[in-house]
Figure 1 (tube, rainbow, N blue to C red):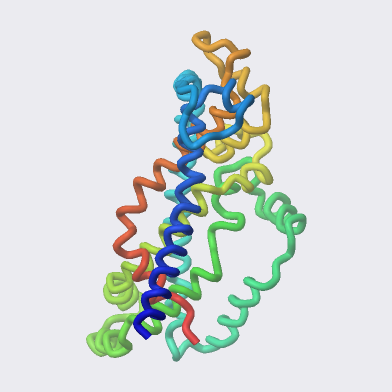
Figure 2 (figure 1 turned 180 degrees about the vertical axis):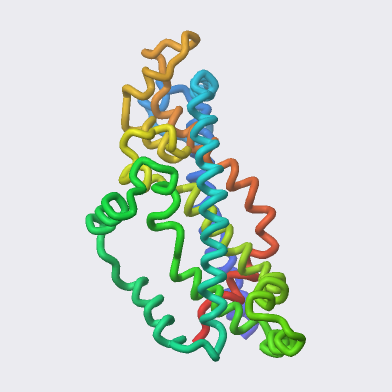
Length: 293
């Protein structure tokens, strides 16, 4: 029995090591490629170590720093507004669903779950947002579609409220004369920091990595592009590279592949810096907020 347990432990640890390497190796290749010369990448492909060390990609980013900073600024603005609005909306939807006395609770729960299974499709969604809501080429086009409200996150938060907030605490607040709003703001929200931080981090990642809204809804206001749309332009438009070159870099010498990698490295830095602040809540929030049978 002991040998079986030891064998399972070895297998499980090996599996975890493999999964960790599967996550770290692509990121390492990304960093190495950004410091490798364009000539070597074109001729030999990627390698685990930079064979021909080069700072050309980062020199190019420094030369086009105004565009990078503008994209960074927009990503920060979009993420800040989107995450705040999304978390508030999620709380306001999840808390009533967690209250057993809500009239029509089952209907609203079914309505929420239904949206996870079915949607109108890309074309009807695009027509509604552009012809009825009129958000095309505006800041709201980068915030509202697809990202502002996530039914799965509502279910996570509702489950957390139901299983982790004692009903006795809510009843005590009611007996003391607190309204539903006061109970939510002063009692439930302070006790829900793990799930709020978890949902905030998941929403932040979704907004920061989103590039589809910029493609679908932004046609002329390229100044609204975030860092991911900037990276998409670098990858797909050769004219973009030549139009943003200063006199210090010859357009013919622009490192194409390594620049993509360098921008990707720059884009992921804010998430790496933000994660440690959420880490203490993340695992607890995922565990306690998971859907239970």
